[in-house]
Length: 283
Image (cartoon, rainbow, N blue to C red; front, side, top):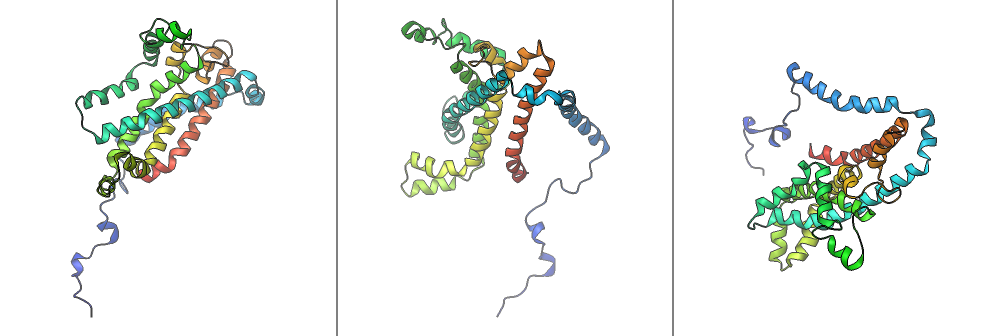
């Protein structure tokens, strides 16, 4: 025997019960379409000009040049190492900012975002004054071991990590704030230590955010120029990354600079494709 049926006026479709679907089926006014179209053109047309001007007939030969491959491999290696550094340092920092209240928390959050607005050249100069031969910290490795950090591959990794770390911290902190902390509370009530809860519960919950943040971090490190050339210089095979090679090649060979730029553009498009599913799922 079944209970009484609900009145027809209280029966709602499943889509309505799920809540309003914002922004779907709305006709955009022309006053918004025009500036939106101009914004898209402003972003796309320069890239189209790069593709239009590319020396397609000699592209294979230029890509096979030793300097291109050397710069590309160096960029991939240093960007990957910088991303590892950012993940090791950034994930714990993001967890502290998202989960722990401590004195000066707002100041720390503000300082983390400074590299986002700081001109990269200024960041490179700051690193040079800190880690150079006469720097606040760099003088000691040079005096004790004769090792100078600037103008080495290590300097490239440090410069790239400096400018890319905020991207990872912001992404992971946002993922932590959006994650349901009831799972962490349940693990704590079952006797799990804080580290075990972090490793077995928190990290799997925010893994997509870590992957997305690390991907953006890697892309930012790959495209870093200002801090790298200021702190690491431009030595072939040691510190001459792809962006630096583009800048130097532009002075003597425009087509060569375009080819190097196309390589970086291809890598950037690959990053966008890798993040597409995450963006679509969150839309």
